[in-house]
Length: 579
Image 1 (tube, rainbow, N blue to C red):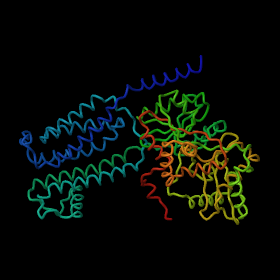
Image 2: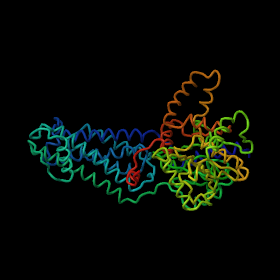
Image 3: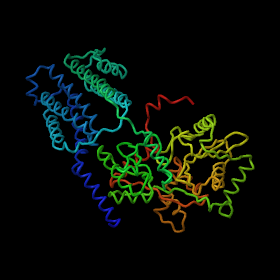
Image 4: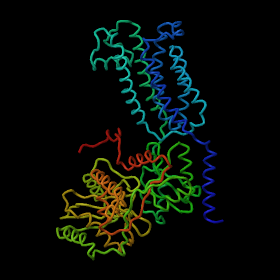
């Protein structure tokens, strides 16, 4: 059987497997999620206007006012709960659907009791859509920790406070003495959420009872929902198990990808092919399942690992994508799926056997290295396994002190640890001046005869050219170390900078160059390209592979994974050390 026919059959098998897992998906979950938000807003607004019912309240007139108060309070509470489920419903989460159906049914009944017929119809339509398209909501939950309960509680407290303030503003004319001031109003809301009457006095008792019922309902929701989340068994976040770590290490010497070792990060998970001859390392960020670099292991087994990756993404309704993969892996993904691909940039690889400082093109590097050496700098090259605990601790302290930003960046092209005993074969190159370390590089193994740059740090007071000295030193010592290839920094959008330098570059290329130049003020785009180019490397393209139509979402997830875009993390805030 020809290879093309084998690939065609593999792709058909994947499509058939995914088809058996679930029927053809539609856009209904997103539509239903939007409708949920609309119905939630209508219920909250309907509860707000409890005291201003229109003429169509024939059912409400048959009920005591107290029941009407409870119904109005229920509208607000159910509206808040539905709003909490909207995003999860858009992502096809089964648990969200299971919670939304009874909530919507109850909201429909309460809307009818409260004589909000239009809202009741809208809630009824939502209930019909949920039941009619129930098969669309199949996804398992995302990995979570108990920190989510605290974040949810804080969000509910803020949201409930704003809703309570909105009610007081809406019924301001019913308050004796008028608007009491912001702080007094906030106190009134918070007291009402725990069932305590505040200092405000209303002209009519029915409004006071109504507002008290609503605030108490919001308080119950604010307390109960986080408690339920806290008591629920957490699903652990991605973590590389010891077994997976050991198996991956056995495969790495035969891995052709220079980023392979970075898949040993502890914050990644691994999915294996059925034969366990290949694996895909990944992390989930914002509902996007990001594969890191190329699959590890036998390329013949890649389709099996990729298939299991796609099945796992389908089970959770995650968007599958591959970040930083080579052209070979990108084509393997495209043969298996209908994914699109975009080039992110190029990795600089130096062949040590052909590297030399001689020649006019290397004069700048040669002069810079000579000047730094004359200033008294020398280099030392050591394996992590040969470092003492005190030396490792000192290097870690230096790395923390010299880091340019508070957030440690990296996902697909960084290991995330420095001189760690778990990486005995990692290579550390030190720049020493008068007995004091002024800069260092950390390289991780790449196959049997290569190393890949992981970390570059230097003291801001060090001489300019220290990084060039460190790289030249390791290249010059490569033969003794048994190293034939060295992967340096990744240069994002390198081809744009290169094309813009050519004679006759078009206006589109020049415009893109200017735009990237602006981005270089915040990110090392052009500077990394210029730095890498000094060593005359060969450039190896790196790609982002993604389903068509998902590029904005996948790109944002990739930026978050690499920590170029961050959001506050409560655990990090609580454990942050004073500078």
